[in-house]
Image (cartoon, rainbow, N blue to C red):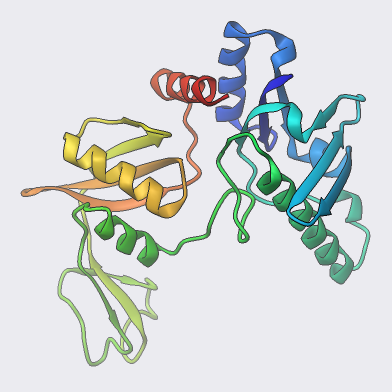
Length: 260
């Protein structure tokens, strides 16, 4: 049985670090790293859906086969579909091929009975696509302190002194719509990896970060906070972080081992 399957784009430092540490602790036969180009253009995928049941057979270029029921856990680091084999096709055909492959990969990962760390969504191979405002709303629901954000249809009629404007630049004046928020001083970064929270913050902030991860559907993310006189303020999220420090890699490895 293949205990660990890692899906990643080439050059993904996090995937490579995690794979290297897993190989120190487990046999080579228990782990396979499959890169995006290998999966999407050099393999054979047979995916059959019969009602609520789906069966998939994945055969890689070197002859290695992966079946639905032969995986312990998937660590998914994929973000987008790659179809270089259709580079000479017209744009419409390239888009059609990418959408078909995207649907096939989503259906395959959703049909797996094993855990998938980094589950896909209908919007992306790596999970849902959330706007800055959506993250801010979810952070508030998770109990994290957030900044006030104001929207205006015209800076000519409404402004906020000392606020940052988006879009920025010379055009961000006069009768134009904008988002206004206060600039925050740099603070700290907190990593959420499964049920583990890594970072120099209080327990209530760690609990809020875990709730944010559950609300958003991302089990691996980095939450940024700005430092204020009254404490920390939510400053944004990286839902696709590169986690290569020893503590983060160890937490990823431990999470994969526990769930496989």
